[in-house]
Amino acid sequence: MSWNWRTGLLAQALSDYRVFLCLGAMMDEVEMCHRLHYLQMAAEKLAKGLLSSGTTPPKLDHSAFKSFVLEADKFVALSRACNFGDDTKAFKRFLKRLTPVAKRIASLAPEGVGAPNPEYPWEERLLGEHNGIQVQVHVPSLESWSDWRPDLPEIVETLGFLKGCFQAVEAELSEANVD
Image 1: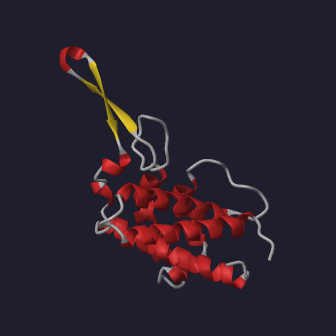
Image 2: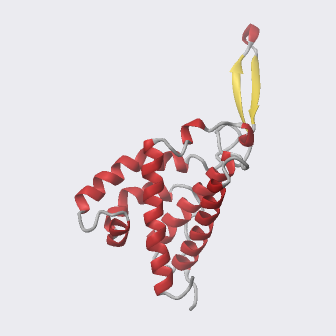
Image 3: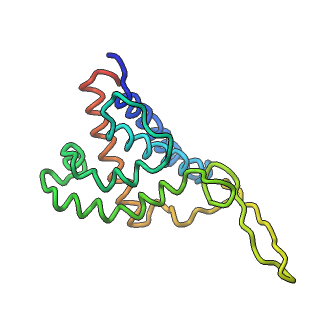
């Protein structure tokens, strides 16, 4: 089988997702930033792959996943893999609930030194004593990332969606004989 942009992106997304799952199984030994990093990469490549015709490379930005969540109702295989069957209205309502977390996943991509992300340290400028500016550097591996706890309902729903998506991707890659 020859690879194209769609199958290549989906295969790499699946690989990133598997690393994300492995890191989740080692939660006590691995900092949360690494899991979030792979979550962001898997979600972004998943979206770019599923939205791809296969003939052109994707944009080199980090906005595909949040856009994809709004369009995922067009993919019958995803609706079925997420246990919605052919109920596109229920699936669309479900996807709408995922939109805030999809935006948060997109924001995990590095945007510069002033935005939190799991990959690079970032800074926060605070007003210090006598109106001076104090720069505080945050290190991803030392952060708690408490708003990403895997037991939060919105995170549980999003991870369930991703699980369904990757089941559909595995089936597509198996049918294409490229896995």
